[in-house]
Image (cartoon, rainbow, N blue to C red; front, side, top):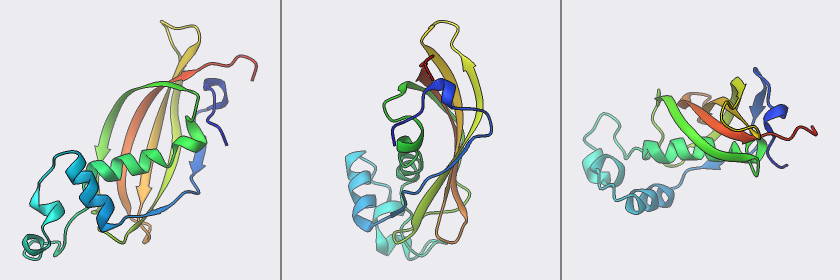
Length: 151
């Protein structure tokens, strides 16, 4: 399913995304390497054995990207002009390799753009959950969306 145009997104619309992903050690290692993040808490199993978690944490920026990424097909694929910002980002629970993440997106605000006739701004609330139903990530995202007055 392609993304939705500005007019197709209404406050309180909720999208329970079907795509889920089990996070692997390779996902976390690759992401840390690709972003030059050498933090021991993400990549050093021996170090992490002596932390309160007992094992490496998945990089939270990877988690954020995954939670938003799985939303794209249902919300913004081909209909977004740009992300305008992210706010209120929280990680209430850690993610570990082997956790399966699913995502829910809610439209919390919409308004026509003041500077572009062909666009509107949509604020999404993205929430990611692990296989236990615990919230692992929450954030608001503002996206500049294409208007399609034919819809």
